[in-house]
Amino acid sequence: MDIAYLNGNWIPPGEAKISVFDRGFMFGESVYEVLAVYDSRIYALEEHLNRLESSLEAIKLEPPFSRKEFAALLLATVEKAQEVSALIYMQISRGVQYPRAHELASNIKPTVLVVLTRRNQLSKEEMFPLRIVTKDDFRWGRADIKTTSLMANVMLKNEAISEGFDDVILIREGEVTESPSANVFLVKNEKVYTPKKSEFLLHGITRGLVIKLCELEGLEVHERPVQKEELHEADEVWLTGTGRGICLVASIDGRAVGSKQDFIWSRIYDRFKKNALQN
Image 1: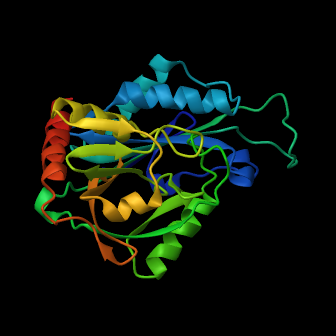
Image 2: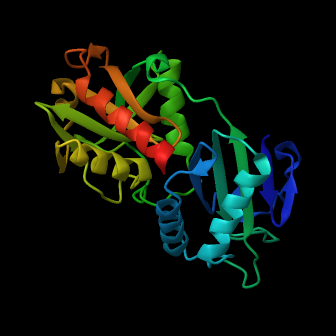
């Protein structure tokens, strides 16, 4: 069943309510993580906790729990839900402050929300390749912080959907950054490339895992600046993220990607699924 935890209480997700004066609501002043559950186990829990700690530190929000307590809360969520396959959304906001002000009060208590939602896993055969459009990346300069201030991401993604595409790859000064909710990989001549870590893209958990899986497969992986033109010259392009796993791209800006053989993607996808189930 779907379940939510809010500030110490376990409730149905539809009953979760916060104050309108929560700074997460007023300013988007909160950070979050999305974790995948495979076979009733949380995938890459330690990596997600590492990033959560980094995000909290970046916005100078004192963690309301210890790392051990965060882990226990997430594991308790899975145990209470009794779901084999699910996504967990965890959000920590600065907390409630009235009256509204940009300046922080000294006595604010963080708001902690965890929501587990059941999901059905698609087989490799059921995953359709994505139609992608490229757009200018006009987001703020700290996309490496996993914050809920996602207005630009939402605008860009829904603009792409309204134009008949499935998703968007963002371009900043001619270089690929990421998709609004995924990292970008490309394959050329059996070598794998992905934009190097920077403040302009999220340091994805799945991104890091895919790099390791490619290396285990004996593939060269290069983390470096990727030019927009390279997307159109690639043999394969993938989008990776916790919610989607590893998705293949069929076309970019209306042009088909690669040879349609997709051999590398298939091999890495199989490794990823096996790794997730054995986690």
